[in-house]
Amino acid sequence: MRPIVEVRPIVEAAAVSRSYGSRLAVDDIHFALRPGELTFLVGPSGAGKTTLLRLINREVRPTAGEMWVAGIAAHLLKPSRIAELRRRVGVVFQDYKLLPRLTAIENVAFALQVADLRLSDEQARERSLDALEAVGLGDRGNAFPHQLSGGQQQRVAIARAVVAQPPVLIADEPTGNLDQDTAWEIMDLFEDIAAWGTAVLVATHNVEIVTRLNRRVLTLVQGRLVRDQPAGQTGRMAWLATS
Ligand SMILES: Nc1ncnc2c1ncn2[C@@H]1O[C@H](COP(=O)(O)OP(=O)(O)O)[C@@H](O)[C@H]1O
Ligand SMILES: [Mg+2]
Image (cartoon, rainbow, N blue to C red; front, side, top):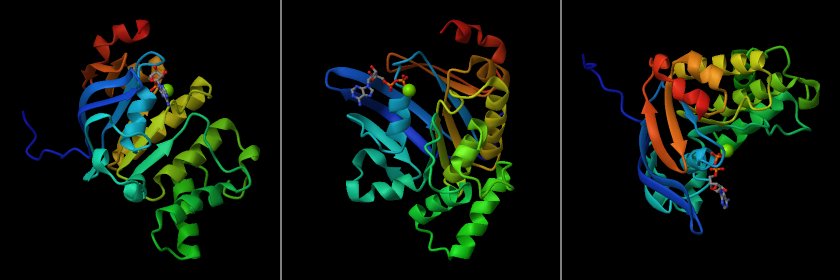
């Protein structure tokens, strides 16, 4: 049965390509992401996963096609308006990218400052603490990154990415440096964040987690989107183990 209310996409790619010189890193891709949806992006090294994520936050510009993000035409965007787009897209990296001289709470608060929400210092601190609590680190706000484990640092990075409540979250191999138990904890967080209504897109090589979580999976091979498998089809994913 069709749902009565169709949720409109928050990210839409239409015939998007990106080339570097003669190399097509992303080749004529179409997809849409909806609020509240957790989607995995898989494919071999060099398939174009990172490029695709960068197209969403306009770190790279499409060489063809249209990329719409939270109502903004990323493909047409003037450099002076890129910040506006970036405020709508939280980003999580494999290597956390925390500022080493700032505490956990200061790292998170820094993102609020960049988001320019005109909060008082007190409000910013409170919201940052809320975000740290949401990722299970409410008691480590005063720790510096080097005092935290890799998994804890990634939690801080996730708090930083969501503190300004962006409608879209992208993560590039977020568990690539973590052991499997910790990877599960991080993926649980992405499920929570999607459940709050965010569209979450996670590039990963973690076949076990992708298979078991049973969410939507986009597969890239040589820049092409060769498969867009809806959530709930784990049984049909034997191909993943060999990709
Ligand atoms: N800045 C760049 N300059 C030139 N080529 C690039 C650049 N970024 C990526 N590429 C090329 O684009 C292709 C896709 O890369 P990438 O998006 O990093 O794939 P993945 O993240 O799936 O490993 C690769 O062939 C890579 O060498
Ligand atoms: Mg990559």
